[in-house]
Image 1 (cartoon, helix red, strand yellow):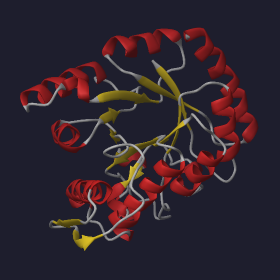
Image 2 (cartoon, helix red, strand yellow):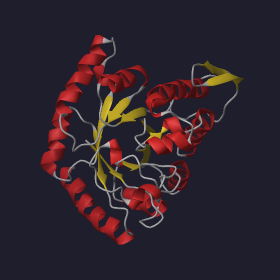
Image 3 (tube, one colour):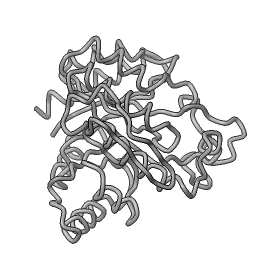
Image 4 (cartoon, rainbow, N blue to C red):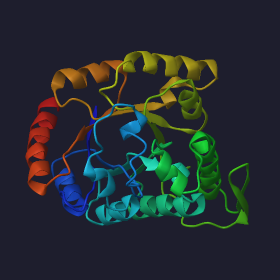
Length: 284
């Protein structure tokens, strides 16, 4: 079982460079950063799109740029894997995004994990010119187009949402054919179909109900579609930081858990990091 860390990389909390150095020195396998380009202050969409959700924490609109932060983290580490948890693909230009991912992977020596997600904030998506009900189709085409840019000398793509004439795009990722693509979030039938079609893994939130059944359903669906279920690596965000919970995930076939750090202040993150280090050492 790999033990990683996840934290909103904000301008008020423990800064990404310092966190990356601490994470590697303490032997954690990976570091994951979420992203939001901005949060529209109308706050029309409730947190996570769930009616009755609590107020959205300020960390959601205080985040550093995800890829820029990971470029800095790559420069001060040598073994730590760097994962996006997650990148809002529908809100990003696929040509620039392909270059950003490939650059971080190349400069880190092949340590990038590309976590992706559809997005839940309708206003945020709209500001990027994306209709909420089209975000799944937009993400799918952008990922397929990026795979072409990563793997072909002269790449092109033609779809409903993405069109790229024959082009050269460099650098290519160090990992071949590209960094692992890992779908985030709860997985219903539509998401499972996307995972099976164009992803290498799935990383749901650990506290959500029904995870064992979803894992079983995903594996069966993959098998029914002719894909080896073992080729889909399952990780978990926000796992409870105790041995019993982590052992239970291991029994489900989960290969990685990412423990959540607070992004309020550097001291708060360091205090929790001390606890997680002791737990990781106990598990090993």
